[in-house]
Image (cartoon, rainbow, N blue to C red; front, side, top):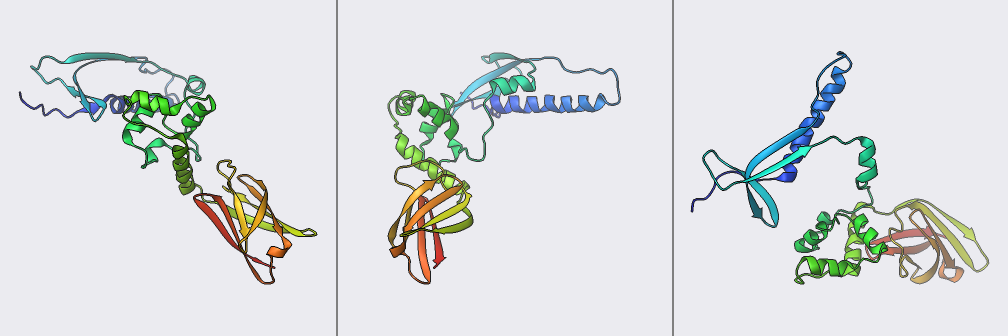
Length: 253
């Protein structure tokens, strides 16, 4: 048996390249429309390919049939057009800056990632949609991996938060204080304070004494600090926003 030297390729890369060329043709057509009243365009594209399917690392790739070779398979497909309105109605929304792609989570096993991709999960937004519908993600992974791999959703949530923190560090814009009888209320405004609601976070300490968190969201924190916790001069304020982000500030009293 001889080893074939034909370079393998996958269908996604091939179609992406083909569609890119068609997009370029459309861009050319839009320019021609400024100078010519009548021209020609590609309405549909139909292709027949003679290929050898190859499975490499769990991915299907193809090798072209060389002249004189037999035993290849034939694949036929046709490209049609789609409008921007159809894309908006049917396609998933593009990822936003807060979304984390599963491929960036190095701590997650590759087989687990692949099992999630098979059910259309590629980002944290997809995972949250399934979780909101009470889909058992753990069972999905076990089924797709034949019971060889498992996934703890709470562990995954921690990894997601860690990845989000790498992208979205907390930013403080203003800090103000309001005097009360036996306490001082601090208001911090900024961005990326709270990325996910939790019963344990945020938590705040002033000079190693606990401060009450009155309100916490992405853009604002309000803390109630007992007056006896404050001293003249420097006061150390530490706020644990989550396990991966701690703000440390020096307050002057």
